[in-house]
Amino acid sequence: MASSGDDLVKYITEKVVVYMEDPRAVHARRKAEKQPWAQKWFGMLPLAWSVWRSKWSRKERQ
Image 1 (cartoon, one colour):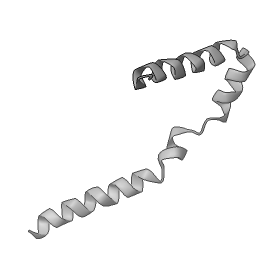
Image 2 (cartoon, one colour):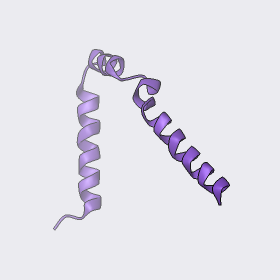
Image 3 (cartoon, helix red, strand yellow):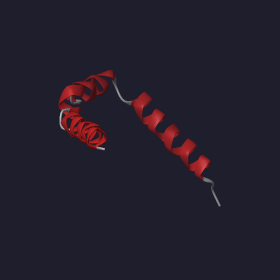
Image 4 (tube, helix red, strand yellow):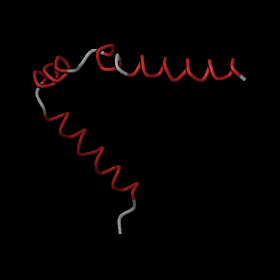
């Protein structure tokens, strides 16, 4: 029976080997395909702001 630590090491090792075997052009293409940080988190920031603001306004009412 393999422990979860062994499975994790195996998974990470496989990912590293695949990364090392890929040519540099593939790495550059993957990096270019990534979303910008602001585009990824733009939907979360207004949500976080509204949650924070609602907690703040509840404290004022008490």
